Image (cartoon, one colour):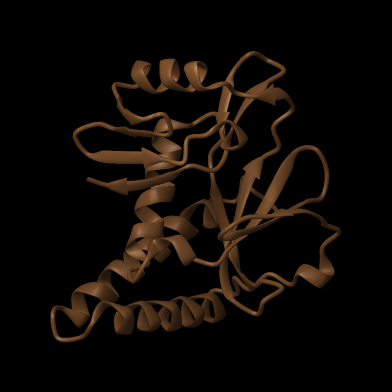
Length: 195
């Protein structure tokens, strides 16, 4: 997994553009659940054309955990690999790409990189994301999360939900935000959407 490869760094941008064009082509003619299916089919074609399928059997990865949309693995203590099944994107994969882009904007110390596509253990089509491995002392506490979010210009709506003029960030709870051994907070798995 050569994360410094310029082609790898463009996958997220090109895939986001592809699903956006698919949504525009569908317009208001088709129900949203229909174009999500078409977006997935286009991403599968994209993966095949650009040789972006990742064979997990060929990798030395160790399973760590499973959440609502991710199966998480690691191969060493430098990175984690997440198989994201697009479940939290709703009926439009554009939401997934908005979320990843916003995450990388606000939480640049723990960015996502898309390296390709695969199927998870449930045989669901997934984006393969890589994130740095966090060496954590503990989970963050709520007032640390609140202070950090306010420093970014966000307003707290509820203890785990924040907003600014453009975005809503939620699920900013201690088990999704780690306090690193370096004293920094790492927002490893929040949800983000446009307001």
